[in-house]
Image (tube, rainbow, N blue to C red; front, side, top):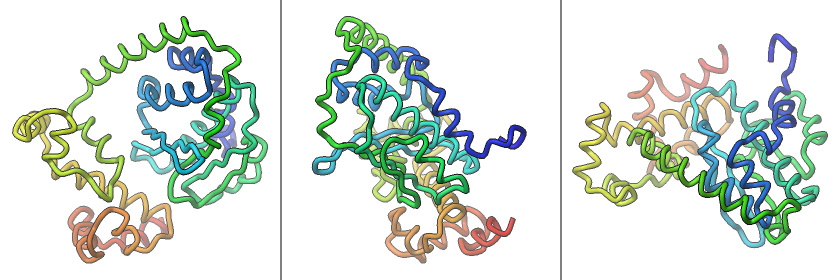
Length: 278
């Protein structure tokens, strides 16, 4: 970005990542029968190509919402990654449906960058900044749109390959990494050890044993997520410390402040001031 003087590298990259370049998942999306099926394929199998972000698909009223969550600890890459993924997602859906998603809204969970006016050149719908999360919001009705390259046979073959790839990923992923993925889904209401064991269909004793073998504990993993998210919020947002504490599920800000000082050796306000003053 610095060498080529490309502060908008994420937009440039996203505009070049055609859906056909995404291997098996790209084949599934292109051959899906409807746009709804294509979106569900992306949400279900994204981990076969994307390991640095998590993705959720849910509904609110007559809206279909796709949420991106960073699962990496490099805030300097945040804007680049989210720009590229959101634009890739939009372009893929427009390519397979033949539609221009003018009724879409894309919400970015960061302040407008210096080149924010260029977003209108890349995104078909409305773009917003300073959101609490990274969201692509679509009218739920688009799910029924038939894809222009629908092919049931090719889609079936692609899905079989994706299911096999997902099984291989799960088998080769350390237990603590799979737990971290689950914990990031709702940091304000993280499951208890017993609840997490039920998610993995094992006993709490077995889960503890697996984590011990990987040199960690469930408590350490929970605190690691809270620490990363707290540091990110202090660096990159203007949220008050009380608000950050509440969003991470702390009953009061005093508990959060004590925890943060234990993690970082300084207060949350000192950390924010130090990071912003360089």
